Length: 179
Image 1 (cartoon, rainbow, N blue to C red):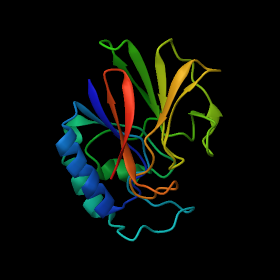
Image 2: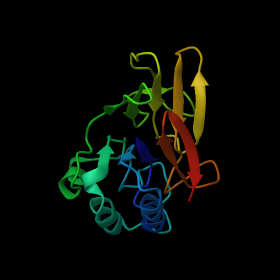
Image 3: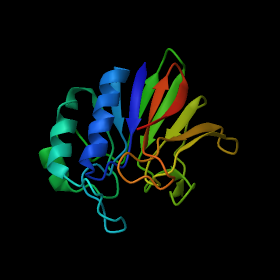
């Protein structure tokens, strides 16, 4: 199973276009979106390429492959314009071939407590990964205290660690890719 994992687009259309090109190049089975897709939020500056209507069109073009969760900036109106469910606080993906359980969330309801994410761990089985966004900071490491892999793809639209990015999950491992 191959996934492209992205978070925190925040309506940045040019950045989203680069993500769409990466999705085409990567050819994943699914596209995982970890929230904060259209609105920049009251704590962020407006992205220079802010054009949520363009982002809607791009995301809807891959709707048949999207698994999404709600970020702290999603609203009911976002669900009205997006052609895939985006209002769940979390989702779970199983990768039987790799024996992995991926817990997908934004990071404001469930999270590992890293870089301003909430410290609220879900109960996870062995061979699990907590996959979250929210902080706009890339993470890929084992959390020994919880026995789970922790992965944050960083941010597509408003990176706070210097580089726009997304993640790829394949065969039980995670990688960051720069946009």
